[in-house]
Amino acid sequence: MVFYVTPTDAMEQNKANPKKTKFRLGGLVLEGSVVQPASSPEMEFVVTDLITDILVRYKGALPDLFREGHSVVVEGFVRPITEELRKRRRFWPSTTRSTCLGRLLLRLRRTKRSWKKIKKKEQQQQH
Image (tube, rainbow, N blue to C red; front, top):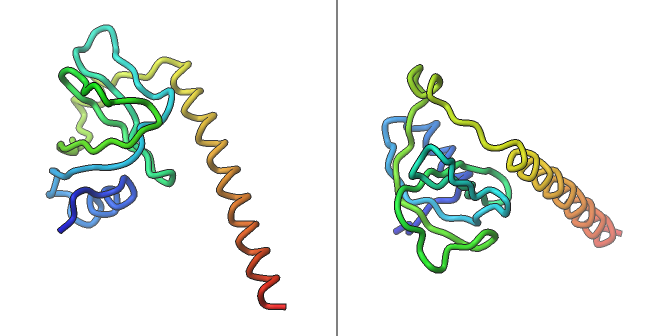
């Protein structure tokens, strides 16, 4: 029994079976990603497993324990991108985009450093 899937697993499952659109997604709420567009009752935030990020749109009151940088499990549907959605597409404010990109670059640097440390330890163990 799987309680939820990570963003990476969700993307793989969606590619393998695009007809299965309902799932429970678990991960961290990316800091700086929570936005409520003025023209919409929906909240937007990014759920990440530090490998893959997925934009989530949530309608309703947020739970009291909802925080950026904390774990979250959400249940919902994947919307296929249609021409209608492309026309109605909303963009994140530039500050949110740059914050998310900056955090992504920081994570990539940390991941690269971690891999270098792992490889270095493996090389030391071999000698």
